[in-house]
Length: 289
Figure (tube, one colour):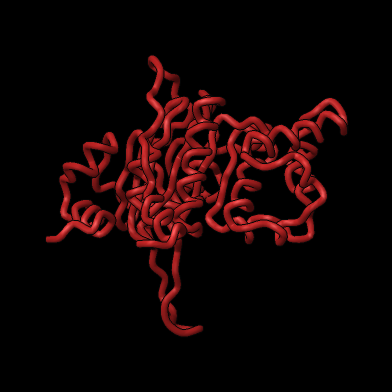
């Protein structure tokens, strides 16, 4: 290719590997035998029948401080449902969830509120997850206000500015709105909103899949840098195994609500044990059969 942009795109495949873990880090999040069941209705209004769909079928995981654990699988595999259940954003049918040593699977809304700042989410589509009517300052400051973080209004504004700087955005954009930014910049704003609350754990739900390759690589670098600086733990949901290889320490492969394979990311991607994982790897890395 001759055009500089084309060269940059071709050179933007996710590179690097996860930050090395230091020592024997504590467990931040633990799930045991998690089940999420939906009751679905079939048939007409008067003769319909009901059946249960096992979206998440007795799954377990643990996540260490400073670690990135990947959840991968095809659409409909249950990975997002599983991730959201661990944060109590979906209702669990059964199972145990422990966050920072505290059992939370039966917590009500009031009991979860003081924990919400410590567990954050960054979604796939930053434009959909940012309120178009709220300025950058309002977007990031809202969580600080709701969670009573900051000694004063001035302190909260400084926290907003610091979160922007940490996310690679200028701290002079407080009065601007989401539509004024590119997709990659909006995702940086979503990340700034999350880290402003100083969380210990972030659920990253396909955070790079809507971005160009060159921007995707920049966001991956940012996430690794934030993890190094702040000791963050990530649960990274994705269908892109190239990104998983660049960011994750371990990976769980899901199919139809079940775990079919798991282990260190290099082991799973370089020596997949199941036909399903082999198929995902071949598709991701363009390996001929």
